[in-house]
Image: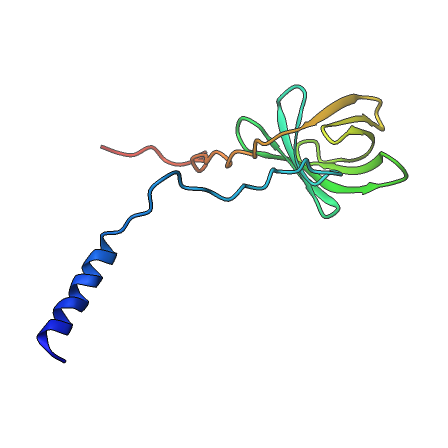
Length: 145
């Protein structure tokens, strides 16, 4: 290869390296999130006390402020918009049946077997991590100085 060919090649590479595309950069359109159907996802009570996560026929409920797990259970969607929950309260230590109506994809109105009523609305919030508490020191001897 002679020097003239090498110099011409290097000049061409230098010129190409300096080329830039001008004008606006086009981005591909982003998919629009679709509203979730059914119960899958996170729900919060209208009193903002607890957040529940539903999926694959089971759910868990946590305190919205501390992240403490309050309840767990299973659910079954029946005919139409009727939903039946079997709820085990980890606070009270009992299990109860709850009948709910999925009003729309954003609201679930429920009546427990005890007669109490509550509503859940879909949320993008997730349960907070549980607060860590110090180990109990009951009965421990005081430190001697």
